[in-house]
Image 1 (tube, rainbow, N blue to C red):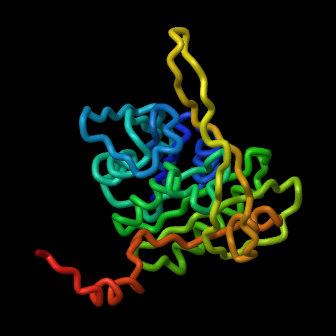
Image 2 (image 1 turned 180 degrees about the vertical axis):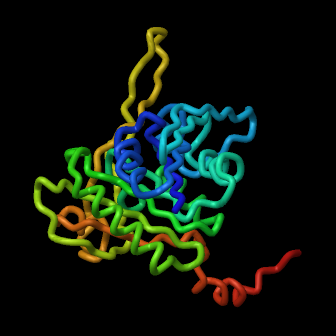
Image 3 (image 1 turned 90 degrees about the vertical axis):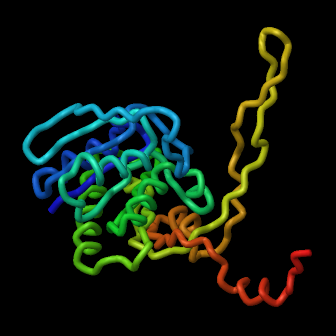
Length: 252
């Protein structure tokens, strides 16, 4: 079985490399990842400069390539250039830090998995709590089990799984299918002045956790569950179609 791995932490991202090392003994693993960190880049692709692909490592069961582009670029290159055949599944991660709720709209990790789903390939985005021990084998055994289940059961068209894993050291209550929550940030911008006295702004912000719905990924992870959220990239609000048609908007 062929697995394509990518991330937005860069080709040296520890979570992705640890996962690749774990999986290579059982599967044929290819890594195509950004040459540097590209966090919060969402679904950007590179149009105005050439993309360069560099082989970083090759050994039994594992090949690693670096790309001077985005996570979505990496998925495209992995499918269309690096691999001779489509992979059986694409994994984006393990991201070092959770991707919960509306934050996925900015996430390069999740966007890479969305790109895979656009190609019709089963995809999983995986994120891990920053306090978690990246060496904990329970993380990788869970992901192996999840990969096997996805390949056995399949995923609906245009759908991917967004997985968030809390800190195992704090205790895991189980695995829970969830919906996306909503995250609100306060004090988003810090105002400063450069040496010439001109003001500039640095994006920062603190999370104002207002989500209370126990069905959400945010609350579930906080309560100690591994969250699996099925994501569908069709953003159409179908309930509005007939309503909009009823508005009878005039052209003249």
